[in-house]
Amino acid sequence: MNVIIIEDEKPSARRLQRMLKSLNIEAETMLHSVEESIGWFQDNVHPDLIFLDIQLSDGLSFEIFEAIDIKSAVIFTTAYDEYALQAFKLNSIDYLLKPIDEDDLKTAVDKFKERTPQNNSVTLDFNDIKKLLVNPIEREYKKRFSVKVGQHLKLINVEDIECIYSENKGTYAHTIEGRNYLLDQTLDQLEDELEPHVFYRISRKFYVNINAIKDIISYTNSRLQIKLNHYNDQNIIVARERVKDFKNWLE
Image (cartoon, rainbow, N blue to C red):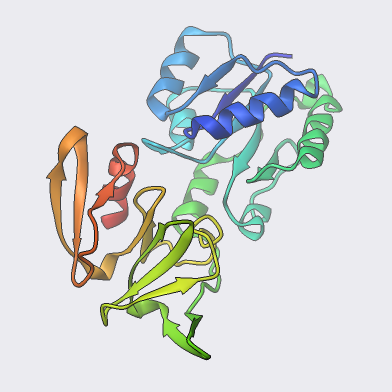
């Protein structure tokens, strides 16, 4: 079986590669961007199966399928919400929510192996899925946090938070009042709880609120520096691999 992985986060790609190897599946080819993937498909025999992340560093992975006529089977590896994915799950496609569970991976691979040769090509309408991602199913995001202040619990409205950051193994929310509050969640746990049109994770350390951005400045190594209305404790830098997606998010 010829298998490739398309995933922009290299640690995640390597983890999936190891998990597949435990199922006696070798995925020697790992691609990390739309541009790299298009070039690879132009020069190589297309695989039997693709493990596909939806959001890559330079755009949505569906751009690959717009540029290249690919008939390989696809299994999604994505952080997108399960209910949104249900809206476009088809018989020939499966999906794995991150972090990928070993049993779910085996089930998806077994499903692929059970397919007949006549039902071995992609039957997915990528344009419909792309529209869904641009206009996702409406869902409820977190509106407030409860934080402990001394012996009291204080409610903080999400719109009053300028940024959320990690420091010394803790996660903190900085508010428009200029105060920092310790949160119970990690940044990774907040990924599905924050409104994506309002909050963007510019690096492993920071989420920023678009309504709190005062200035954006060119920084070294093709990065960007963010200035917020009230937060001045440390530099807020957009990671280089996220700059393009961050610019798209701003628009």
